Length: 208
Image (tube, rainbow, N blue to C red; front, side):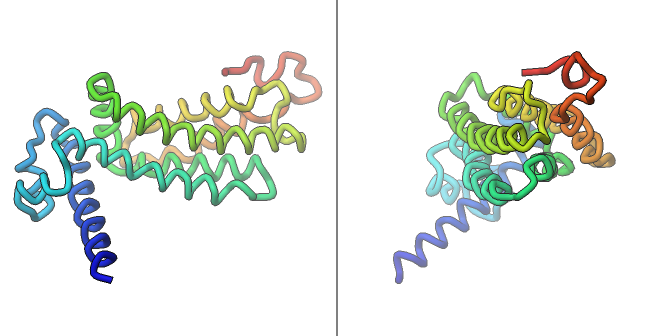
């Protein structure tokens, strides 16, 4: 029982540090944020941070490691929805929802800056992206089968394109503006089968 309590306490402390660090990295950048800054924001000592994390890069990775289990849970929620197109649009809404957080764009920019310097970080992000891409691809394939998604689309390529659109929402995030409706329209039009009078395919072209 004591080990269970200790493990829970350690997980809570890691989460406490990670959340505080994420806000600082988004606002100040990785280089300008010190471990002392993180410790102060988390209400711990510097030694307390190093007890749970090897170094500052490990803390930065942890910010994005949180997305791994969350992405699996999110994709699973929509996997068995009866209408695949509805599931895709609702999943996209959920994926883009954090973009309304004022720190979202800053954190993504910092991720792009640090990716070339940390192969482990790249692996974490790639694993998360793969979970989402596979989930979207499965739904797109189901939509093609039931006739609600354009048969010209290649599921894996279409899923990757949708992810790119969601990423763009984060890069251009504005807390004062909700991108949900525009994002849904963009993805819905991309997925829609061509009308009987449209011989060019979906809106004249496909991305992939």
